[in-house]
Length: 355
Image (cartoon, rainbow, N blue to C red; front, side):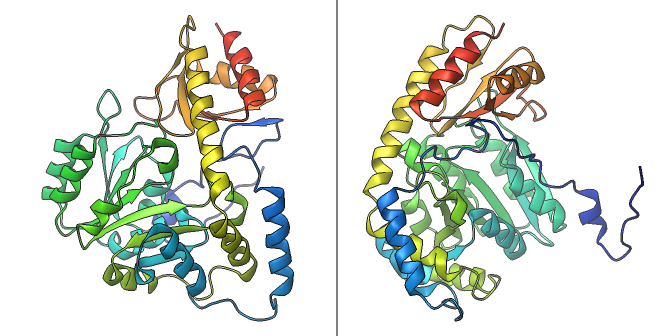
């Protein structure tokens, strides 16, 4: 086995950080990435493919996906000038770290979505992580203390929280955003359809605030890669400077236009997901050794006596989940997405076998 020698010109911060922690697997029941278990409706896919075929593939797309920004703004009731789109909200997280984190501070909680911390480390920002409370709620006072201790940077608030699925009170989130002052406050709402929460009013109330949303979850379009930010035109102008030109391809734009024209399918799928989430949690409530933790997202945490053994047991039954037991406060935990009713039946049966 050979050992690779680091390329001398690569920044030390990049060499120190491990790659994104995900290993693809090929199991029949895929509950490891918080995806919508249903594909884009067949009739809408047919329409999207027709529009793709009609477009000129030899021409560059809109400079900043301007037509798509207009349509998203109309759908969200948001000024087009305050909409920024990129291929996935993870790209926006990287750009936001470039915008307000490099040479400054990235403030978040622990545990949290790993991309926040990964990008802070890769880009050499000062990373400050505050442990969640024992019930996984936001440590509001501790975060406020850190806001006052550091020069302004970027603060991430995730609602529902990942990976716990917890939703905090509106009062707590408002308190924290108001305390942030000149910080850039990112309200990551990737799973908001499943919790019924909506923080657009908090974004409107302050200049440096931003809502992060995605087509990867409730919309069932993770394979197309499209995320967007809703913010003030002033902040959008600064953020757009960091977005590469022509960054959303013509084919993705065509498909998203179709989705935005006929979004009704999303509500039906979210309703089923919420119902199934309740059914799965109720079915596992009396398990003798495992505890299914409450969630307001399209996933939940299962605390087990042994995460490695539980993961292997489920995988042997064709179900892939995501281990979370390396994170603070998540000993024994697996993160499990909500699938179709049949997939959830298989999950319940497999977890019931665990001891």
